[in-house]
Length: 310
Ligand SMILES: N[C@@H](CCC(=O)N[C@@H](CS)C(=O)NCC(=O)O)C(=O)O
Image 1 (tube, rainbow, N blue to C red):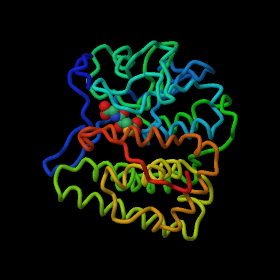
Image 2: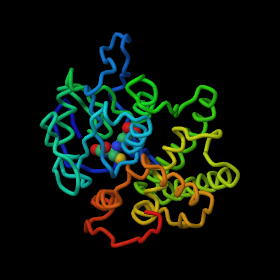
Image 3: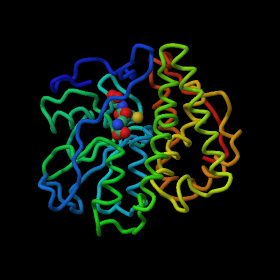
């Protein structure tokens, strides 16, 4: 991670643990919005912003899905890091279908963080919404970036879809809070738990949440309301990684996803939407997660599973 703008330690995935061995995720450091008149100076302009993502990363992929659902591909550039974590974090290698950073010339993601803030302290995470005009980070919190992409680019977005309709905001927030705590971050808390008790507690929450989604989806097409919302994007990014990585590497193996018929049908429905399917690179997901040496010292990437939905 970076301390006062210097890369100080080898990359290690356990961001922090509490006294009971529970994984704690770092808070994001750049939290600006895009607006013509906010006084922050980040106006919506075609070609000005870049979304830096990793196909392995569920937080990054939720922003990528939103970008494509909104039809912002022509307005915002996207660059993809190598899925394999290096000792200096995310790298632009040009390998495995990843990109070089031809826009800013960075070799590693952390260089963009120190360019934005020469004294930055924290982890150099993706996604990052980058401003080419001011050469700084607008925002590195995917929950914010989802809202920025949904609302802040106005007419630059080709598709009128609203992923956060005002009438559903409360229901979206309630569902998102549960999904984040028990599922999106719950699988990480199971995978990176350092005590049996912390793992047991996390894995139980993961499967309770799957049961909750399955019950909801038995009688509904979407998780909130009667339309596709950002909640479906949030659920999808963890569901599509479940069999590939979380079931094995993160020990979320109480039951396979196929035990949840409603969830499986929902996952297939979402995969039929190009913005969702286009965000999935199974080889990046496997290569990335299985390169986490703390969980997989040999670095061996498993051959399977063979999945009929990917
Ligand atoms: N709060 C962030 C979390 C992002 C995050 O944890 N990204 C991970 C990849 S899945 C990362 O970049 N990790 C690198 C590191 O921790 O050094 C968000 O949702 O945008």
